[in-house]
Length: 252
Ligand code: 13P
Image (cartoon, rainbow, N blue to C red; front, side):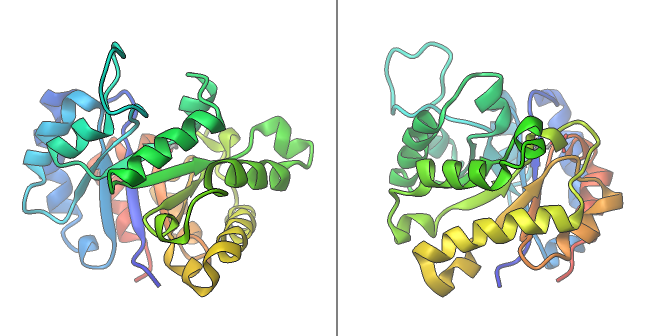
């Protein structure tokens, strides 16, 4: 079984000038937790160089929140995977629900980004998850199967092995409405089954993270579930104390 991955998605929060103090505190508060779990923070682009410097020689890893599917060119405002690699960034979140629903990214575009990230030998974290009306309409399984098939269906097993999946039910993101551990486990079990169809027993090696209102108070129960291999934390990752407390609550 892989180590649990505790990942923080800062979204459009924390300015570069705030990174130094954050990193100093997180390194201190998570000193014990990093012995048993992997820790990753994903700042906004301008904070990446400072975050890399601040976590240099620390086990805390640094990733990006998004990237463009092309390597370079006339794409004003965009950042390519090659630029991230140049900085020293391997991890990148792709297909986050805010990219899908606020910025209008569809599965086809997310697949292009994913293929580019894999070609660059990056470590993508692909997010999937259903909307509230899809869950209430009993369509969660159908949505997860569709998102999985459209983005991962064409990938080779060796490419899939570089991937981390994140189940982020959209209704649980930033709402305070966490999925119960049982509800999350059910979705993770479905995703594990889909991975197994492609990877057989190696599917256990692909981490599936849960994301959506994870806090120190609910992290331990979520992380205790068989198919929850880590968490992707938004709001609670902005405070090094609560992020470290989430990391500390993971079983070994
Ligand atoms: P919150 O933890 O703020 O609900 O955000 C979850 C998320 O979107 C992580 O990517």
